[in-house]
Length: 297
Image (cartoon, rainbow, N blue to C red; front, side):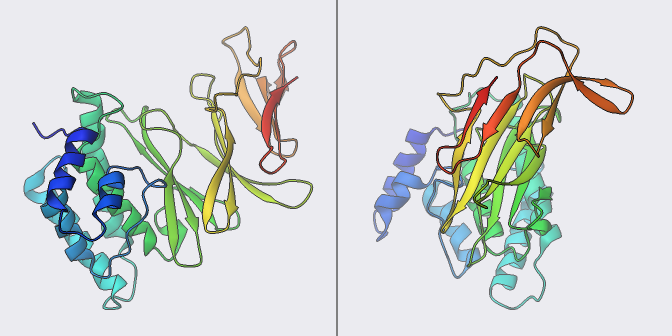
């Protein structure tokens, strides 16, 4: 059985990387999600991924290995050619195809496998490390992102589970001085980001709100701010202290976001306009740097 949990993979890495000068960090982080893992900066991408497979127990998981595994390997070769200056244009189509093949299989495993949300597997670890390198060399966020912010600094990538209506991964891409970086939004199997809003507070500080207003069950909001060489999550509806009394005693509603007032309301639609449902509260997001927070009234 090819599923490996964090502890087993950690043991494999310990055994395989005894001779590596940086083995401690790799043992600690090799299974980490993007945004937590300290991104490697290999010069030779082909050698890098070969090393992951040979020394770290990492594998390429695709649904039809006979043909699709070679497509992933070819995308690595093209990405390496671009990184080394042997190819003029970024291989966006090859990379997107590889990412779709890999996440399709992860979605299948997540839906049909015997593991739970805490399980990691060798294919997922390959995917995380591949995604980081693909983003690292991506010259334009729009080449890989499903949608992006107005200032072109931030984008969102989304992958569904086996059932297209269920989320698997959501990722935030952001531009830095040296290429781009990526981090996971929310948690695996729970977060579907459908919109990205660029907001500013009274002091002119810029925020990026990753949002899903579809219904209460899927409702999620993640507020980020660029901070030096990273993207900081300021607050979210997943926070332990997020508990505003904001609910509607009706099933006939739409949640509507007002970006001018940075608030959400339960609404009904009449003609071309939305109207707040009488008796329901409004959820606000106060933009105030690290003190930003949600509240209802």
